Length: 152
Image 1 (cartoon, rainbow, N blue to C red):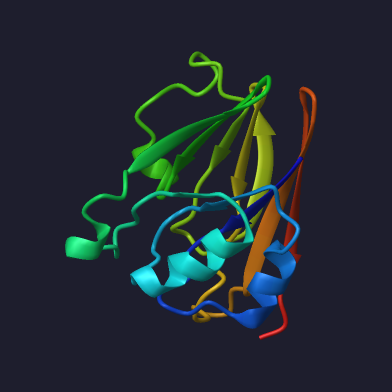
Image 2 (image 1 turned 90 degrees about the vertical axis):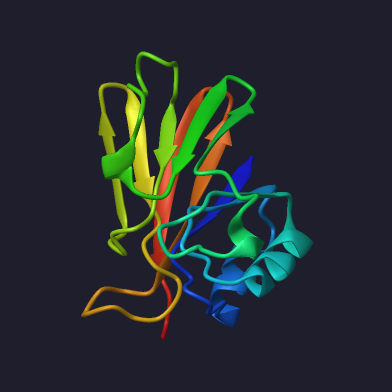
């Protein structure tokens, strides 16, 4: 199973990000969408799970949850925008993966049996950070994260 990861679009959905996400079985947007127009093209590619980021305000964002839990076979994924606001102990709660955004820094690190993945920012460039997206490749209980820098 291929789970496409995107975050921090900030109102900009790059064609390169859409190209990368095509072929995903599921897409996760880890917040800071900043406009509902971003969600329709993503949902047209694959089922979409979205969490609200700190810049997602207004009536359009009111129904978007702050966190989400996905169970894909034996793999549980917790999604939150800002990792610093994580309200649970992922390992104790049986999570295999935590997907977050907010920092705009792509990262993938495993700690205590939990894979923490931040696809970085696919929207407007911030400082000298890359424009990036990611994916989770899930095969049974095995999970691999891949982060990809996009040409800006």
